[in-house]
Length: 509
Image (cartoon, rainbow, N blue to C red; front, side, top):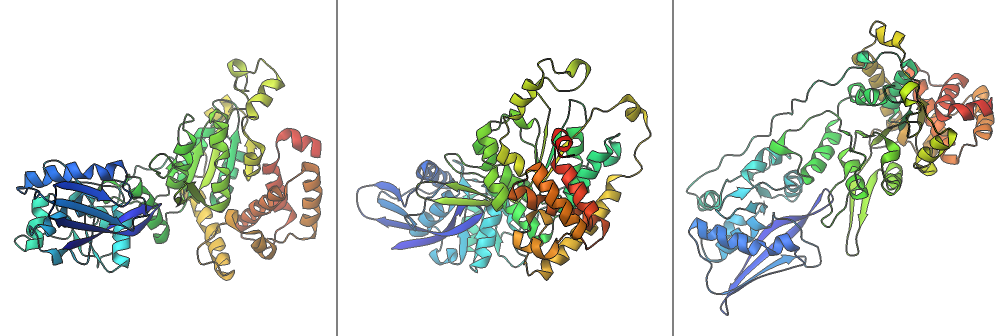
């Protein structure tokens, strides 16, 4: 007899159905797992054997074969332990075999028979609900899985003994409740920033349209301080966005206790991060920082200190909105629609005044800035050179506008963009930064004066086709903040000012 138990294998945030087929037949004692298992799945034999012994059961002296179907799909992770153990228990009559029908099972076993938490419980629960199944998962994952649906039948045992008693009807396990929302600390307020009014304006425009932003200035100019205040300007996640973010965090193992939050992600990796850490990958592919920043912000401080290979790997996710990890036998894609915010010094010396003044001249700045490739810079919608903050700015009274005031304008502009996306037939709310070129021709047509300015500036600044369209997108956001439908010369002039560096602006003038 063959016992079938349903489980899942993860491809990105998608949970693909896998059947665990367990057969116990007469023959030389052996325990074999087939079906393209990785090292963690192959080692499940010893964990399952020890957990069954701790539960009071012993494997029969027979030939045991476990097949993970489909056999050509790679199986990775320790969550196959529990379905294999339950399949064996059903095969030897320790639990009713029909009790596992209609359930998707996942969990890792400890040697004493307890069931440890695993990553990916939320995507597995969503997939089980779509298939009309219930879910058996570790107790530590129950609060996370409960977010999938109020109608999903969830059994979250602490040990093999508990799930065996539940399946036999001698003990009833209550359905777990969804985890409480994560009480995140209060976001830093824009009111705390002294001076840098132009940079605050650029930050507001970037928040309203989802534009990529690059701050360049000497140490202490407030680049990182401004970037850390961007989350306080962004609206909360929509329900669909929240589910996507939660599923990515679940696969990455960062959803402890099932605590969700509607605050947009803000990821700030250290400049020593590798290419695999940024875009994902590794021997066992995992989501990288770009995927964990989905629907939020990826902040790269000290941009030229990142390796050129890691920075150039960001170019494809910035365009397509997904991070693709390709292997010889499979391909994984993670959602990665993020807003890139970066900060850098003009040169390695600092490029400021006094102790941070450059002692090597223009060559130092040229060498330092050349570490960031031109194609990546071309994808930065707003580039702003920030001057050093003066003592007068620091002694001035706090700014009149706080983050809540600016966030209200950002939300109003995003509502205009959402309504526009709906009128264009897009199924999801689309920010100006993500509009396709075909849509720009309908919603961002400059007036006569603006068209003349844009033509002259594009030739003077030598804008690429991508740069040309990104200027129009930024101008569209500026017009939305003003509540104006027509794209005028003033909107395009401000957008062009954020595109060019001071030396280029001087040459264009």
